[in-house]
Image (cartoon, rainbow, N blue to C red; front, side):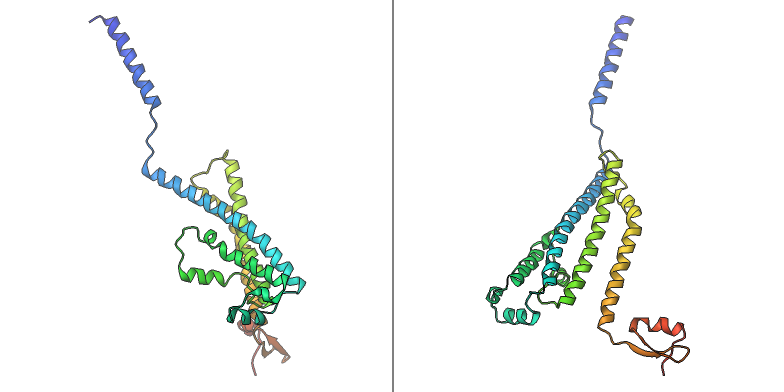
Length: 239
């Protein structure tokens, strides 16, 4: 064989192999595929949560306005109509009718709260207890407005950090997206959780009878039930 021809042939073969290798799509390991799907699912969840939160906040604001105007029918009247299967329209009360429509919108959106499509009766029952209803007292509805807005605030905090992270990564979702979001939002989320717990405790205090105790100097003080242990540590006593 001619050495020069052989060298040319070998060089052409090598070039062809390199071109073929360059044009081949790298095989993505299964673990990488699973990780990419996990990140994608998390991003979809955050975006959906934010969308629902914004829609719900507008609805809550309107419900609160209706409550503050003071024209909504009492819960006892609404319960009586529902008991006899009579429509709300019989009351000829626009505020009550609008409230019932907005209340129904929460029920309609249950598929957005549980997007998986597999919703148990327990989940539906639990969800129904968290939405404002004509069956609630005005005071009870205010607590529900407050709590749901806090939930939505937490969703918005996550979404805002998510958008920042995507921007910092030139529009791409990093593999550690979940960890980054948790690290950046944990303080704000903790603060929201504390507001929620304090609100629940304050609401409970309104419905609990204070306990009469006496401070170290013998002066009578009325202590909320949840504060009894702290009061005793500070020297308060029963008689």
